[in-house]
Figure (tube, rainbow, N blue to C red):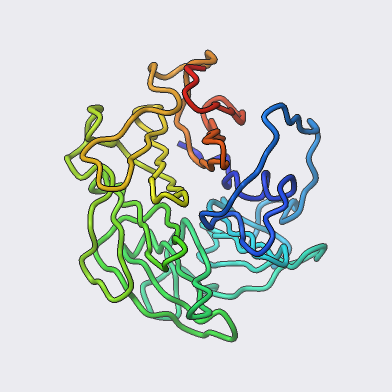
Length: 282
């Protein structure tokens, strides 16, 4: 299926004062429950047709918005990560961009990117190479593999520096504390399925301050919440089969959660953004 969304990160970042934390961090995201958005957005990255010039993108997927509003985009089909400064008319390649490949200086269909501020580096889901790579944030010419044999579609990091990685091949989310090489399954991990202890092609992960993990469970058309230490999750959005009703989702992708527990979902198959209040059924 053609991917039509980046993520919710930039959509919400314009609307929320987040102080010292970028949106992808488990920060206090405070959105008024009756907030409304303008129906016409503005282009902030790309928008110059599909291509490989530095003012173009090709099938972009994950993004990360830094404190200074700099945007980092996984420019998937160009096999690179692009850094785009606020109000800039073109970007800068900060990882990859050396053609599709498996070399240390290359990427192969990267799907997501975040910043590890403690190490001042990028962490990238290098999906086509089945690895997660760490890339120096400033003047880096090559990266190093930190996780191998993984089909990584999404990742995030909590305030302790623990890395959460979505593996859609194993239908699970795994947490890697600093220094760990194997990690711990924190969502799914019981094969492909629709039970509450299973996921089916998970795509995106968000972690709140309580270390609860929210996962867009794409093939099950739902968003799942796994509390820390839980053996199974709970459905917090969708889960009523694929469809376009207010109780349904269709191939959800990006997900973020505010401090009230309201879930915002990029409902990819329905070309819409959905908001689910805590405990709501639609």
